[in-house]
Every structure is written in structure tokens, then in C-alpha cells.
Amino acid sequence: MNFITILNSPQSFKIGIIKNLFDMENIQYRVLDEFTSNAAGVAGLGINGVRIQVIEEDLTRAKKLLEDVEFD
Image (cartoon, rainbow, N blue to C red; front, side, top):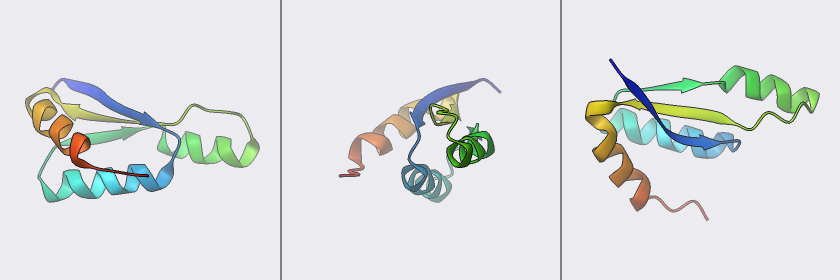
């Protein structure tokens, strides 16, 4: 499977929401740097965030879902 990064965010609440959305829509994804980012935040290392990747076949559906989500 070929995974493509669709989002990079340091906001853990946003990552959680997106993971739930992808789970509900059966979109295959993986989360990179989640634990490193949490540890770095505690240590103040300034890691840029967590990356969410989806499989290439789910990319269009995942992008559409992200367009419909408002976080503000």
C-alpha cells in the first residue's frame, strides 16, 4: 500500500477528530510522529506536529471529508 500525507498538525484535538472521521468512513490511515510529538511538547522541543497519511485509493474521499470539517 502506498500512503500519502494528507495533514500535518500539532493540534491533538484535530488529529483525534480526523481519526474518528476516517474510522467512521472506513478510510485506511496511519498516524506518524504522534508519540514523538507528545513527548516533544512536554520537553519543549518544537516538533512540527503529527502527520496523518491515507492510502492512495482513499485520498479523494479523505480530502473531501477534510474540506467539510470546520475546526474554528
